[in-house]
Image (cartoon, rainbow, N blue to C red; front, side, top):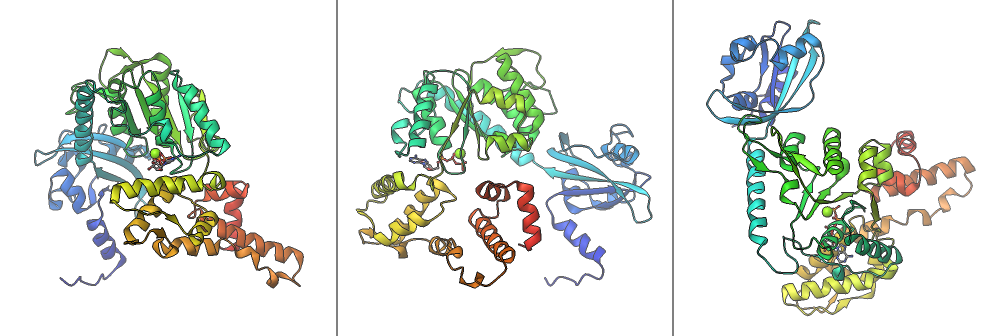
Length: 472
Ligand SMILES: Nc1ncnc2c1ncn2[C@@H]1O[C@H](COP(=O)(O)OP(=O)(O)OP(=O)(O)O)[C@@H](O)[C@H]1O
Ligand SMILES: [Mg+2]
């Protein structure tokens, strides 16, 4: 069907609103609906006509002026934080949504309120399923005698590398494996944080108990809270009695990935659990003693996470009893590139039933010059990719590599050709060099300002100022 041309911006806006995945509901100063998109109607189980022009209390008889977030925001002029709610909609369907209410000013200068809802019913169901499966898995695996049980794959002997900083991290990690102290692992993406966490668990006296990993950035706050701490029946509509990850990991290790993305309120709650050694399920009255070792990870430097208030200071000190830094691949190329390449060639020879012998000199030069923003994981994927293209050949050549690799390596040396600067005033030449260096660093860090600032050893704000100044 050919779309009808939008006559005004308002028509266009209406079309957009009807295609986005969030429910949008706007009321005027009297609390009457003036905008209600199709998604909001689907979430609430209404037809838009049933809602347009009506007062909130008329649409939802169970609400009143105090309990309706839209009316409250209308009166207070204050936004509400994102909050999760579970309710039965008009069509009798149980819905879990995340809502946020914001005060707005309407065209005639009167106040209004806007509610944005995200339907997370399916996500909630998935979390429930995963949580149940994990519970069952740990019950089954309690009977398992295999050395790397509980879904883990790594132990210290599989960590490849001889760079002194890596060896130091392994040594500290091995010592820490003996104790139950919390550990904070810092390393950029793909440096091997999960490998370290699993190795620590498997070398610890807890190795025959569960190892559970949860990414703190993956789920909305309330879902994560119920997943971590568990729920008691009736705590909010439809909640079942279920053990949280802390209880499931009892006796073992809980890996909390990307701790710097954990909501600040949850960080406070986590700190309390760590200090007391007890958890209380949401909606529950009893506390249960738990013995869980926490390994947390951060892929930004802990100092930055602290400075930018992404991690509470008290939690940071509680977690970083042992602080391990995992070095970047580009910093250990000289020591470890050969061994890692050979390791992954062996792995994929085995997996793909091939007999690849190695890489040629050009590939070695490329690998040595490349910046490896994705660290060991990226190297592993590059070699896996080469196995897909290599056919019957025995040596990996540049044509078996992704083209971006060579391009990026070429772009890494823009400062070598500085003849064009000769004859220019010093401040202008320096500015050009600065601009170029910033641009290259931004390219190499995929425009990650925090990382680019770290590489350039300047403040994030300074970098942002310079980006603006040079129009980058
Ligand atoms: N030292 C190492 N020796 C062998 N393989 C490694 C090493 N470090 C990492 N790897 C491999 O690299 C991949 C990425 O490692 P891992 O998942 O531990 O990274 P990560 O630091 O947790 O990354 P992210 O922050 O993206 O989660 C894995 O497949 C792992 O096998
Ligand atoms: Mg990881």
